[in-house]
Structure formats: structure tokens, C-alpha cells
Length: 264
Length: 345
Image (cartoon, rainbow over all chains, first blue to last red):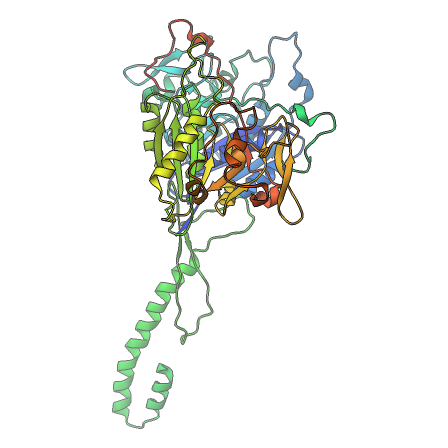
């Protein structure tokens, strides 16, 4: 017996396409490493990593090759004007938007609407924390499934409101609960079939108010009563919106102390 | 052999005998041919492709060895089955890695331990010693440990509060995690007999760092104390031991106090269990330890600089990162709490 990582692919299990935008900064390799360590437990997972960069970097390429996961490596650079944002315009392009849209575009290019694969799309940022249970909850999504997310909206968690009949009827949030979809990026998954059926549904690039990015995509895909609540009718927390501190590199000084060829 | 025998037999002239012999031999040759094909062919058909193709097709996990077959060969078929279990099956030959993790209750605790467990679940022969800084072992940790499936020991010891300060201030003179790590060392000494040599390695892994899987395989071969670089400590991209051409540690590449006896982070070394059991009085010093000297307070009782074993390609690769997690903003909970406190995060 040889231990296999990830688990062997199954012909009958729906595929989970995880789209992760990522960008170069000191903790990038650490984040992607521990994320990969989680994904390596999930059967039939296909990781779509989209770098915010003009070219695919060696760091990410090598990491993906070594990990052993089923993956697709893309890149698209957010134009500097969009990154900086013009401070006098109240909206901005949230980070990761172009990258997530490219991931959706790749899916639509790779699979045909006439024979859609069984599976879901999930947007997983590289600094969040995901339980293994979450992936099994989302695997059998018919249209769009939703669940609670910890550490968003200034709360311990935000969550959909689920009626006794098991339908989503609102949002348990303090910040703008009347948004059409008051839910974090990590709180929903979309069936591939639906993505392919609605080829023009994407995240809006500009003019998006804070907290409305998810809505900008979901409104073209589903209505509130079509949502499928997961995680025990949205009573369990299976994903946490963690954020990693920026490391202090003050002792590197002006010229750098450590060897720049050693990859961190 | 059958062919030769049949040939010599067929040279005999009697027709009746020839017919009888053919009728006996024919079914046997047919039978042997069919049996031969049915066992070999399926294994040859399922072939796991190990090329650099990123779109790796993970077919149902059978591997096969191809042989040049002639009817005379007796073929031995070796089937390698790829299994995934969580954690990997225990091995009788690998030294056990005892991972000591102090932990304390705060909002991100469950998230940290979840992603740490997801990493540890790939490492064979790993024993997780989780030590809570708490008066009692909490249900959250108890449930989490049980649900992972890991081999574990659940301990707890509370760092005394400093009553002179207001609020829930622990004694600031005791570095965080010290009593918990020491409790684990004591547990190991009480549990394992230094004469009964069950090979093991002890590693101190804080719950917010990031560990590569490669790191655990590097430390498994530790004879006394092994060391390697750690990212994001000492105000640098990484700190690393200085290793000479002979492969010996002779100093420390740090900006902060490089003349400490062991200028290394907690995550940058592992100790052979035998050494822990032999030097049974070696513990982390509780009080009066200058910042950055906690590791030295233990290591100086265990080993000298020249005894250190450099890992990670003679300390040129980063396999562990001292990441820290931001405290989440919970301002919208308000005074009375908005979310259901019964929902565990």
C-alpha cells in the first residue's frame, strides 16, 4: 500500500473547481502551501490558481507542480489604475475580480454547455481557512448553495436566514442586510451547469459598492428563494475568513540581509 | 515443456493413441492460455501515467509492472495499490513525530487548529500533543481532536494570572506557551521509558505557523537535535543557522542578537525523544528569560552547537513560516452580541 495524495479520482463524484486569485507578497508561498495541504484531502478537486501578475511566476508554478493536485495555472494583471483606485470615486475594483472572472472564462472555454460536467465552482481566497467538511457540503449543489462564514461583516459570523421550510429568506448581518446577497465570497458555491447556462454572468469590475461584489455575480444566476442552504440549514460554521498579518521585515534594512535567491 | 512432450509423443505412429493424447492435452493448453491472459491483461491495461502532465488523470489506483512474456516464464505479479486514508496508515519502521502544540482560547483558535490538523493529517506516524492554556480541557478542543482522526494526547495547564494587573492578564514574565510545552515534556518522560527505545522526535509547533509536509520528513532522521531556517522571524524574511562546508553549524544568520547560544526560533529545531528522556531535567525556563532566549534555555541543556544536525539542504531551504493571524474585527457584535453564542466558531 502506498499513501496517495490527493485521493484517487473518482468517475462518479462531482468535481469541485476551486478558483483562487493570488498575488505576490512575502506570505504568498506560506498561504498557498497550507491551502494546498487542505485541498490534498479533497477528492475530485481541481484547483484553478489565477495570479495577479503579467506572467505566471516560478514560485507558483513550482508549488503547483510539486503539490500533486489537479490544477490549472492562469494569470491576468489588474491594471495599476484599477489597483490604486481613484479616491474620489466611492467605488473601486475589489481585489481578485479580474482573476475570478478569468477563472470563470476558463471554465466556459473548457466545458461545453451541451455536455456540462457534474460539479461546482467555489471561490476560495488564499488566506481563508476551510474545513474538509465544507467541500462535501458543496459538492452536490444543484444551482447555488450557501452557508455561514466566520469573521466577516464585523461579526463572529454572518449567515443566511433559513425558514423552517428550509428556504433562505434573508441575511443575518449587521452591515447592509438588505443587499440582494449579503454573503461573503467564501459563503456560496455555484453549479457548473449554471455557470455554463449563463455565460455572461461575471463579477462586475467597476462601480461596485463595498460589499456588493458577490451580488454583482449572483443576481444574474439565481434568486433568493432558489438558494440551497447547507451546513445543517446554515447553523454550522465550516469556513473562516482569516487574515494573515504582514510580517515585519525591518531588519532586512536598505540592502537586504537575507539571500534574495532563497525563496520564502 | 508441454510442447516438447507433445512433439515426441506425436512421432509415435498409432493413430488411436495420437487422438487420445490430443484430446487430453488440448483442453489443458486452452485452460492455461485463458488463465494466463485473464490475470496479466487487466493489470497491463490500467497504467498510471506519471508524466509531468499537470492535468493528471488519477485512474483507479492500480499500478503494474510490465514483463516480456513467453509461455515458459513464470510471472510474478506485483500489485501496488494506492490508498488514501486520513491520517496515512501507521508504519512499524518510521520514528514517531511528537508534535507539541500549546493553544489558548480566542476567536480564531478553531480555524487555526483546523488548518493545522489538515496539514498534520498527511504525516505518517504523527502524534499530536495539544496542550490547552486553560483550567479544564474545553469541549471545543475535545471534539475537534476526536473528529480529525489524528493520533493525539490532550493536556491542559493554566498559566497563572497576574493578580496585580487588572483583567485577564497572564503573568507577562512567563512567555506564552512555556508551561504548556513543559507539561508535554513531562508527559513524554512519564509515558516513555528511556530504556524502551521507541524511536521518536519532538517538535514544538505553534498553532498559527505554517508547515510544509517536507519539513516533517526532514526532521524524522534527527539523531540529537536538528535545525533549519524559519521564515518571518527576527524582523527578517528568514533566520537560518550558519553551516560550514563540512556541514556543521557554527553560528546564526540573524540580525537580532546573533550571539545567543541558540539564535533560533521554536519552529526551527527538533529533538530526538531519547535525548529528552535522558536529560530528564531539561525544561524551558519559566521566569527570568530574556526575549529571544527561550529556545536557548532548553537547548543548552541538551546539546552543543557542534552537535546540531542541519537539515533542509544544509539550511538553504525554507520549509516553515512563522505566520501570524490578524485578530478579527468583531465590532458589530456590539454590547449584547449579535450572533448566536451557541454557534461555535
